[in-house]
Amino acid sequence: MIRAMAGSMRIIDRYCTFLVDCDGVLWTRGKAIPGAAEAIKSLVSSPSKRVIFVTNNCGRTIPSIQGDLASLLGFGDIPAADIVTSGTATAAYLRSKMDVSREKVYLIAQEAFSETLTEYGIPHFGLGPLPFRTGTEWATHQLDPSVKYVVVSLDRDFSHGKLTAAYLYIAENGAEYLAPDVDRFFSAGERKIPGTHSLQAGLTSLVEREPRVLGKPSSFIMDMLERERGPIARTATLMIGDSYETDMKFGFNCGVATALVLTGNAKKGDVAGFERKPDYVLDNISGIL
Amino acid sequence: EYGEFQTFQHYFKLIYLRMKEYDVYLFDCDGVLWRGLDPVERAADVLQHLLARGKKVILVTNNSTKTRTLLNNHVMEALGMELPDQTCLYSSGIACALYMRSRLKNGEKVFLVGSNGFAEVLKECGVEFVGHGPHEPMDFYEFNDFHPDPSVKFVVGGFDPHFNHTKMAKALIYIKECGAEFVATNLDRVYPLSAQRQLPGTGSVLAGLITALGAQPRVIGKPSKVFYEIMSRDHDNLGDRSRVLMVGDNLQTDIQFGHNCGIDTALVLTGVAGPSDVEESSVKPTYVLSSVADLLQQK
Image (tube, rainbow over all chains, first blue to last red; front, side):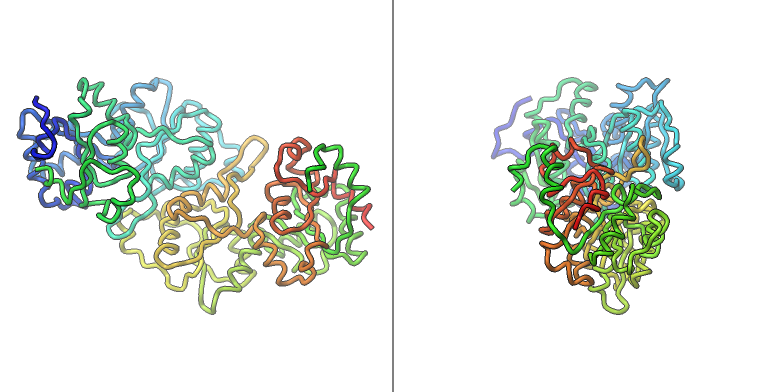
């Protein structure tokens, strides 16, 4: 592989491995972003290039992302191995550490993440609303001693009760505190609603430590990909994403090149305020062509 | 001024030699006058002694769930007496309600993140509220169709066992989009349940909202001096701060409160703080008493 000189070549020609975020890069809320199909086509059709889809949305299963790649962009045979979510990263971490015959996970999440854990053979519970408990009931509540991991991600059923359960498992059981992501907001169309980080904030201050982050911007996913696929040359790798806090920082942490697209989270006016500039700022992912 | 008073033993000597005269005594309750429903020894005698000598006695607790009626009942049950009037009873909840009431116009309301007890406090103070109690969890995209109530001018946070993501998201919308003022009774990290276990407190409940906002609420409870300003509206003799003494058991809330308000403080050892806490704390009380009973020595 000839390492191209910068300046004269297209961005796509300068790298071998492309890590591509999905929301805000390829599609937004069920609609393909114009130019995305073209960009991905150039990547998947080139034998010397490979693309890996890396999303922090653990509320999506791999099959559902494969479904969108097919129905929105026309790529019907992207293998599951080329897609990573913060959910599958967390599941892989748990599988590498847990004694699944004796240990369990207390999970604060939505359905898709629970499905992912089940697929990976990770015993877990906690999905859905927790019935209300009074102070007296909490005072005498017996914790399940096999819970050694607490995972906190975005959950519409997150409540004071669930926060309490998570706190007690960490404080009294010594459970490890894990986060698939630390995203500050979830974009519900026009409105931003509190994201995973908001659910973690109270717990983090109670247990007086930060969670171990498995998704972006932690470089865990990169380490995991290398374990599965062999060494990935960092200087020949480009991370393309729409969020500075997750995608660009992930790129910085992994030592790869970074391209920020403006079709999602980040707006042009934000760029001046970044403490570190991405290597490229593109209006659209088709800018790599 | 505390440079001279380094050792704990020194404090004990000072109380009998140097305690000034005060006109107004502010008392924290739990760990000072009572523990639960059990009185601290001679607490009732102390209050009677001060009242008989024309001193003003005001109770100042950070427990946001008690109405004035309930506080009054607690005084009766624990101490077998009543204070001359209920305006001498304050909790962080009551202070919060009064703060909002003074700023709300007719028909304006607050979005309440709090307990049933706090809801009763708001009712007692004549503050109208919406959003109290459990909220049916909303799917994230449903928030696009949420229409906030335009009469909401405050979001008020206290300990809320019904807190959930949906409530947090609505509170965020009221503050960010509607410009509602964000106030809180306190930001305690934990709520002590028993000797063995604690629950997430108001601070932990509101942490997510605070981080999403990137801004803190105006905290009304101790140690905020806003609490003092609210009480001052109803009690003129709080104006001369050199004649006011705060008596409490907690260095971070009671004694810090005294510092923030520029009044003298007395720490009692019948509650949260012990002698080593005084040594280690950067916040030093003016006096240390073994209990409120030491005040019977006061002229």
